[in-house]
Image 1 (cartoon, rainbow, N blue to C red):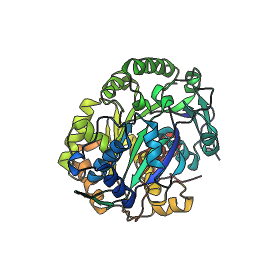
Image 2: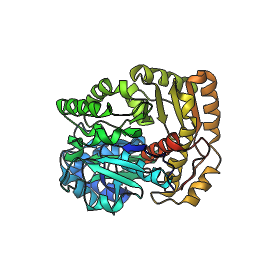
Image 3: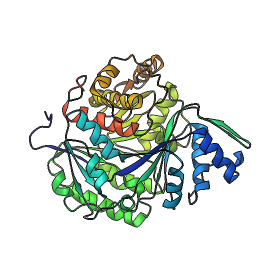
Image 4: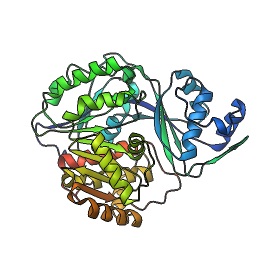
Length: 408
């Protein structure tokens, strides 16, 4: 049964598409290092990825530090060539689409704004999820999603690296999301929205095109009813310089601005010890000076925190986001209600519990911090964790009181 109040909707946008997911293996990567004669000194992320060799260097650079990221790839052929070396799985991707799937499981229906549609998307869209699409043709631009496990070791030539953490990488050549054409029907859809998720603009690579799309979006958003919550989820911009341009245009309209630990550290230009109260407190203060929104939400492997004037309002939503993301991490894309309920009963990480209490004591009512669960998973799912967090967060924000988040 739907938990949605009569006449009010959840609108999730603005892109999305098909993902080809794969998991790295040492034998394939070591063979590629040998074939392309890649040296350890080359392991710095290339500014552009035009060839399979540059793609391998980019992946190894991230693996070496256990990082995650998203990149535009100039050649779709090199994505296909790399994907053919591994078993792959087709799933739906994009923050809005994955969030919709998690919300559907929690009994909260939504409407997606898509920029690309095809039979794979139609087949895999979750129950209780409607959509509009800005393109009346079928198009197919799959994204490559690369997942790697903690302790994956690559030894070839003078390269000997071991991943300190599990993570995921996104490589994209997608003209539809890169254009982000908005449907003329978006404004009417927003006129009954209680929640509106904005994501996907990071794929646009031309400043003038981004400006036009933002202007159009702001026009549509004028139809949002009073009291509607606008949530923006950050992501790695294919052209990093455009991030500020988006913030200049949209910050006055955003209620909650979400981002992960990689994006936090990228904005600050420094590494942050995520279990150091002084470092995180300083990071949150610096970030809010850069992104002055009512509420910042930062979600990490250890905890999730809301910082700002409405932080207390979102404590239950933070917990909901952690619960959904942790279940996905532990059990994958097709986790069950039983696994979800079992996750709710798991203990929290002791170091995260201590950190959260100390951060709130230091920063007072301006911050709410919820510790993550203690998880020991041999082969975790690292793809879509931020998207799952957003789905859980929005479901709790929208219709469910704190502490009562459960699958339908």
